[in-house]
Image 1 (tube, helix red, strand yellow):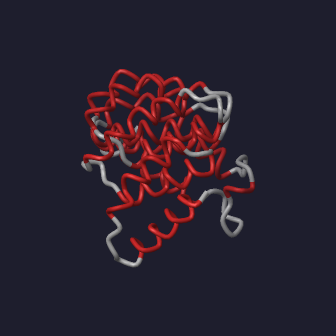
Image 2 (image 1 turned 120 degrees about the vertical axis):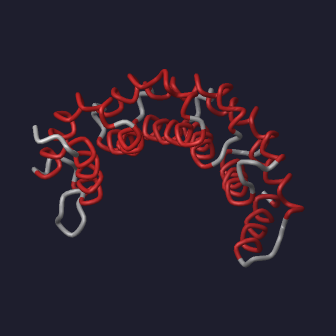
Length: 216
């Protein structure tokens, strides 16, 4: 408990611009060995203190692997969050199968975080996730609008690089846009009575790329 409180103070010191590098290793230890609440603080500290190329991050790989296989929903969420924020590029093959598994998890928050983790992988190592494009399509059709919205980030990136390869999805994007404009999404997505404006913008950007120089 004391270590958790000290770690919060270290985060505060770093946020003020003071270096607290002595606490980095303790943040990793807290994420590895603490209670769920302590692990949460440890993971938070690691995500704030370290970057993807930091040598200490390798010490966290086994912990992430273990937490991705945990039956505790909070531990799985924490592991997916840190993976989607920062993870060594060389270690992606070690955890990719576990992240893929989470696309079929019964809890929508886990599926959503798994999609965001795969989006991160696509940005830093696109060749490593080429084989799971069909699973991205499944996420696009997910019954939870949060999972579907998360998948649009990946599609926007992929369509920017190769619009011709995704023309067949145009009807799907138009259908989603019609549902959004028609107020079919939960009220949580509305902003000042406008149905999911950020989602509408994302869809319009995708459709503009797909429809460029294509009158049909």
